[in-house]
Length: 323
Image (cartoon, rainbow, N blue to C red; front, top):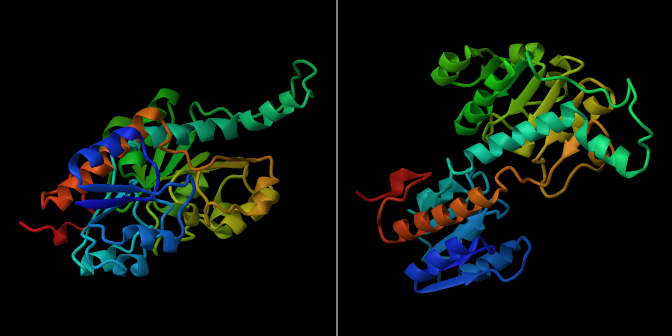
């Protein structure tokens, strides 16, 4: 079994691959590889372990007829042409569950940072502007007792919403199906998107990126929100129309926003960087020591099992698995 890894991942994952595989080639640079570099690295390989930042499109997939498995070091897999892989009988795997809590926690960190103007306060203090306590200095918003809107209640959205119990919040959610866990434990109510946006004080996005969710939140949708509302996105950047968000934030249509993901990562709309009412993070939703270690192990295990003809723990296209 010969595999190519597009980036250095935590050592536990690399060691597992080296123990089980005949050849493990790891991309040697600490940057996102180009398409041609991925194609070159894939030559003669049976398996690919890639990151969310790698575009594994039809050209990449078709470049190597030997390719049997694509293991994604991420929960999402919109970076992979799954249809093309399935057509060629290539197993595609991912790493959900292990990053659920870390990402849910970061969404709360963003929400607090925007609501209490933490980043603004840090900058204000470092610049030597703090001259003592003031009754009107950097006034923010309290979370307790407010209405929380959760868009998408899969694993991460559910974990995020459950933490609202600590703040005695009313929870609304938008999802295709009912979430009985949230309804039973929080008294959460399933509503349509428009009602959620109009009624919520805080909105957090936890949807996958699909044709249906692309630019789901645009200027019109943002203007449905309360003037003092906050929106947080730790899912996929393109779910929000970034230019529309800039416009809305510039006009004061909402209180603020917290973003860990962007429409054209790693590029970020320049106007967004100039606004004080948005907190920007470099896609670190799963960036804890514990989570990244587990992701490395799981992505390696998925790859090894699939190469051996066994059923991996998580498979995106199970129809290609042989009984």
